[in-house]
Amino acid sequence: MAYSFVDSFWVNNIEEYISTTGFDIVWKRMKGSQKLGKDIEEYISTTGFDIVWKRMKGSQKLGKDVEEYLKSLAKIENEYSKSLNRLNKGSEIGEDLGVMGQSWIKLKYEFDQVASTHEELSSVLSSQVEKIKTMNEVQDEKKRKCKESVRKCHSHNSTLYNRTLNAEKVYKQKFLENIQCKKQYESTKSFAVSTKDTEKLFNKHIKAVQGKENADALYKNLVDQLEESHKAFEWEIHQALIEFQKLEEERIDMQRNLLWVVLNARSQVSVEEDKCYENVRKTLEQCDIQRDIIDFISNHQTGSTRPAYLKYHNLDETRKEIQVSHAQESLSDGDYCSIQFPNSKKFNLDLDDP
Image (cartoon, rainbow, N blue to C red; front, side):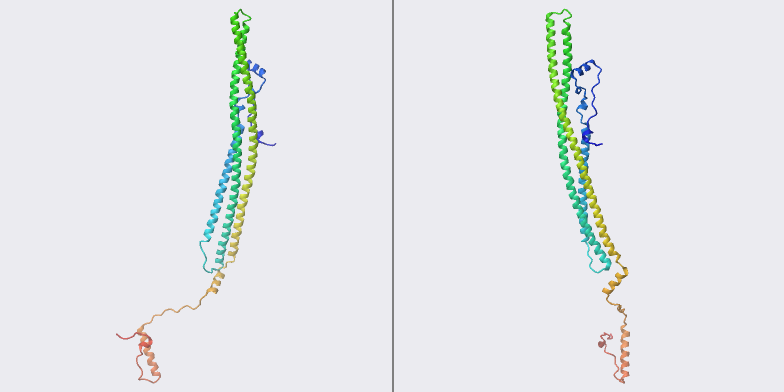
């Protein structure tokens, strides 16, 4: 079964009034029209159209929500990309730190790539925002025109219908007056009534007939106008329902495809991010703690001998040691007369007694 707005959103089946009055039976026979039995609220009702219009307003809000959400998401992605770029420029490695240092450099490089993927995602989101924004604007304008056309026709139809109902009441009143005047006039034939009274009743009857005919002509004319107006009103609703269903089908198709593209783009970013992280992990796998230490020592060692400790020197003892050493040298040479105190200046010692 094919479903469509145009076959599903009219008023309930409109039935004729069911009346027990003899006048209504005569009235229906005389007019032979079912239109007189239509309920005023149902005849000019826009219940079905109002339900569809409520759906259109909901669709309009959804489209705006999607537009604003994607716009905010694009802004977040762009700011995140810029923040990553600023973060990567914030520190530099100034010396060789082995594989771990290389891993750190690799990580920063890959995060630059991650920043690029988020920047691309921001561009994709922005392009989708423009698409849905354009669609929203086009659809809003079409909906507005349909709504305005139906509103104008409904207003004219309602006004004309109220005029027709008033004309119907006047016509019924004139019809009853005519029957009453006719009975009064015909009663003069059965009773002795003066010629003057008969003439007066006759003129009243003629006037009632004329009033009934004028009311009937006006009422019939308004019914014909109302029929044409109602046809135009139904046609506008018919066209609006067709247009609304078309717009809904376009909107659903467009939003479904748009969100699909957005999700695919985000999935692709996740894939690209994981590739970047995997590249860093591969570098980290090559990091061997002992090898890093050995490589650093091999490339930058300065020596294995530690500097001698600073010893304490007592100057008195040093002076005595020098004197003894000098005396021993003189004795070994057989020069006993040359033994003397060494010149302290020779040894750069300020040893003069006070």
